Image 1 (cartoon, rainbow, N blue to C red):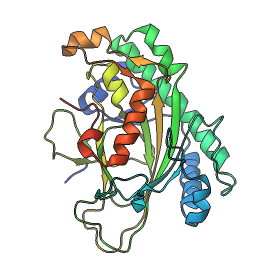
Image 2: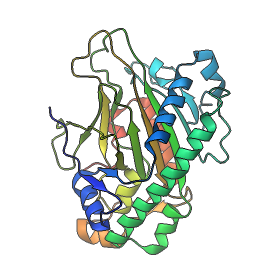
Image 3: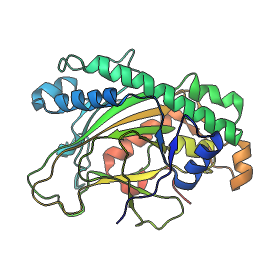
Length: 315
């Protein structure tokens, strides 16, 4: 299996047309020239690893309350009965997640600098994601009255996924993160250079045609989610992806870690397929109410229902 030839574009010089066509063809793109300092990305990875390495009783102080949006520490990799349906082989990942960090209230006491580092990254990713949305909206001539909900009033989150080191081989069929699309509008991902990792399925390809993605050190990975797919009536598809173990995974498996930024339009928004996109693709898909759809997506992810996780990928 060879690395996918995901387009690599320099945001400083690429056009809206080039960016949008890459998202249409691949449902993802690697962006350089994005303005997120590598040193800050490394600090985010380091401080997140410090948190994940804390004793479980310390992390449990900021555990997700289990109601509403997942915020705080989510120990799903343990197969927590509150989060995973009985009989489901759990994905081996824990994460820390939050939304709207200016008012977020589940910061851990340690590491003390976690709040300042995460907030700095969050603000830069928010600016980058709204810039990408602006370029796509201009190229596809999406209704200007709809754009403000995505760029002026977005609802944004940031998460760090930790795939812990293991001293035993995974169970049959067990992966680090099962195939899914993100229920958001757009996702920005960065990852440390750890073994095993991200794979994608390009639109209009066989279900088992998974391609590994290698992230260059100066690039971030852009993935459209279900809400952008719905707004464009699947002119742009939601990116279907999974996280797997190294192909030669044995009894000793090192950690992997990634950071994921999510942008949604304002939560009171109803995402309706844009007329220009309906004209390109045919019958309009039903509208989606943002807050309701995101909550449905979190319940589906907890259930382990892999097919239900594929929110907007039909070809």
